[in-house]
Amino acid sequence: MATFDELSKSMAAERSEIVSPDEPVSHQPSSDVPPKGAILSARDREELRQRVGEARARTKELVDRYLASSARLTVALARYRESASVREETRAALRDTVAQYAHLLRALGEPPERTLVLIKTAFGEAALHQSDESRAALDEVVKWIVDAYFAA
View 1 (cartoon, rainbow, N blue to C red):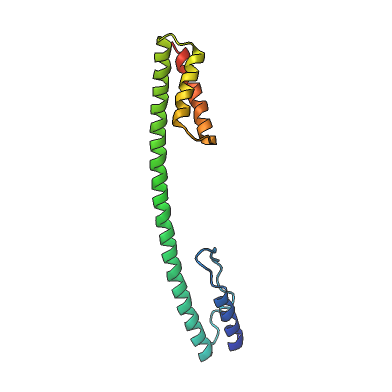
View 2 (view 1 turned 135 degrees about the horizontal axis):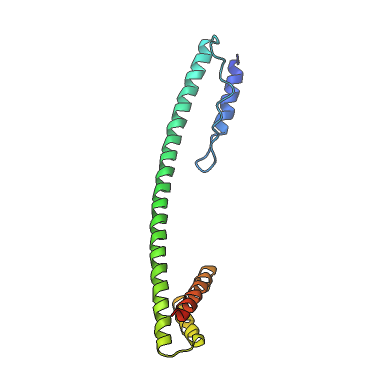
């Protein structure tokens, strides 16, 4: 069984190692818990009661932190799902509009090269900043143009 001094030192070490809200939390139980059935002195019992109180307070703190984190994640996931849905709807509308534009230009007698230049110009006017995402979108638009122009 641990002496008072040993328990005091271990508790001081535990207090100095309190986890900040940004640090990961260990889920390992304390190793200086007296063995089950051990006879405890009044000091040991008081020390354990104090540690129980500290563990309870830390538990409440972590429950609050966990629930807040879970709530933020739920909101973030809902926003992501909504954004993904809007993105896919907009992508489908863009694909249909690009196809219609290519069909109309072909009906006017524009050659495929000119059709490609006209649609790429419209794209460039809308996408003022070059990025990996805009280049990937332009690649898709070019594919849709070619598919629509030569579809009969």
